[in-house]
Amino acid sequence: MSVHRITRSAEIDAPKDRTFAVLDDIGSISCWGPPVGHSEAVGDTVGVGAERRCVFDGPGGSRWVRERLIVREPAEGLHVIEMIDGPARPPFERVRGRSVVTMLGPDRSKVVLSFELTTRGPLQWLLAVITRPMLGRAAGQLVRGLADHLAPREPAGTGGQG
Image 1 (cartoon, rainbow, N blue to C red):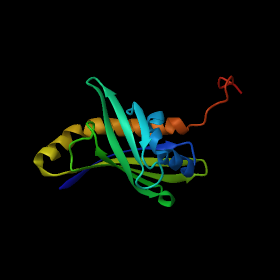
Image 2: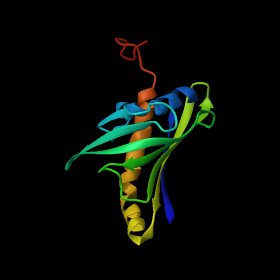
Image 3: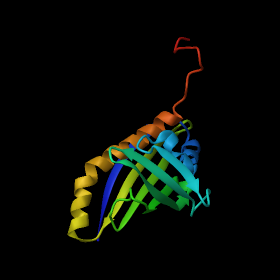
């Protein structure tokens, strides 16, 4: 078996605890993660074992995946999600999304997202190599979406003019 990692990161204009809280809201990924068309928490919604269903819309129609939170360590800023099942789950031995949030300052944080694909055999290994660019784009969209979602907003009507 081998593990393939695709990693993207973004600096975020929000404190670490606020950034982690958004990741912790298990069903809300579609509010900030552009590749996800719809998401909802299913079953337990808080802590390790919490699950969500994510729907991805594409040219062939909608496909979904069920994911479970398997590691949650707020002090370390660590959040690990594993894809469990569904037609949108890539056909690898194991598929995980690992997020690490670190503090850069009182009102700034950094998130590093890694997709970890565990492959078994040459066909899964080759598929991981082929899908790397697509997964890299998706990881980039997720971290940029999170940064945009948490970015400070100007009060309505100011138009950026002080």
